[in-house]
Image (cartoon, rainbow, N blue to C red):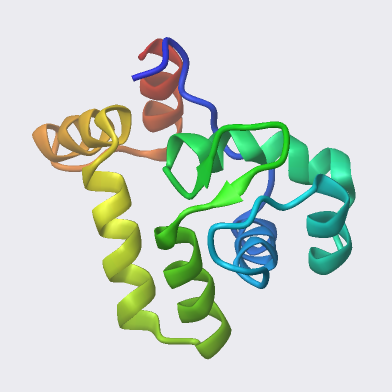
Length: 126
């Protein structure tokens, strides 16, 4: 796990657009930042700001041009086809495979829930 978890730099809706843009190319092919920005309709600086999060979630592979993973393609297709159960299934697997997010979920379960402020403080502390 990385020393610092990179949180997304955008809303959930923008993250969806970025994932769909990455999954619109050929599987296994690296995508230049400008192509993703154009396909998503989101400025390249915003796409770039979210790539760290997508890398940590194992939706992209490292490199100057980011290559979408199989999970990214599956998630992008699920979003495009609006298959809610598949979207939830993929995110659940991605979260379970991420040590930081698993710890955050455990902390919430141990406390029988957290309000927004407590969760933010816990994330910052962690």
